[in-house]
Amino acid sequence: MKNIVVLVSGGGTNLQALIDAQESGIIKNGRITCVISSKPGVYALERAEKHNISTRVIARKEYPDVIEYSKAILEALTEEKADLVVYAGFMTILDELVVKAMPNKMMNVHPALIPSFCGKGYYGLRVHEEALKKGVKLTGATVHFVTEVCDGGPIILQKAVEVMDGDTPETLQRRVMEQAEWQILPKAVSLFCDDKLEVSGNTVRILK
Figure 1 (cartoon, helix red, strand yellow):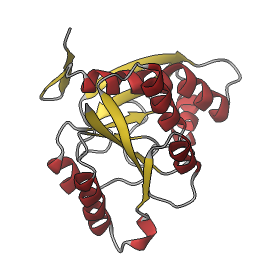
Figure 2 (tube, helix red, strand yellow):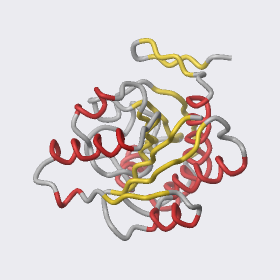
Figure 3 (spheres, helix red, strand yellow):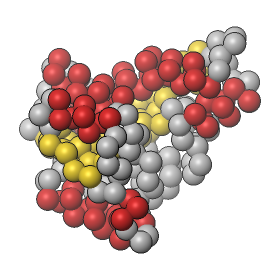
Figure 4 (cartoon, helix red, strand yellow):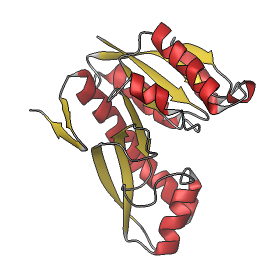
């Protein structure tokens, strides 16, 4: 049984999708053992507590720079014996010292089809605003392993979502969450926990 630690910064909708998947048996060989938030008082912490999942707050603002903050996060991950770390709306880009310590053991969900609308500065509504500005007909979500390159790690799963006439960034964001993020993130976590992901360079192969 693998220990899953989820990193959050806000409401925790992706965390809820993981909790639901765990409780419904989609995630069989792993369990969420801890939720770590970069901010106090966020709703994601309440979600975890409602399901008896332990929580920690490691507030970004209490650390002088990203390196010191990253060291604190890595220390917590080590203490929690994390086998997999999931970014679920975690709004801090950690120093590479963390991913180097946990290669191919950290995954993130991004609300676009990487390599479109990704990289530094592309998060939250900004992603959907840019997709609408570009006039794309399809967008979606991507789950990828985290590397030192922002949104540049090996892609695990992707799912496309249609852009509708009259979409606003808010309506598009909601559809991408419901139709893509909340489906492929639990699936990717399940595959990892079942030892069905094989990484070769920048390619992830899903084993049968």
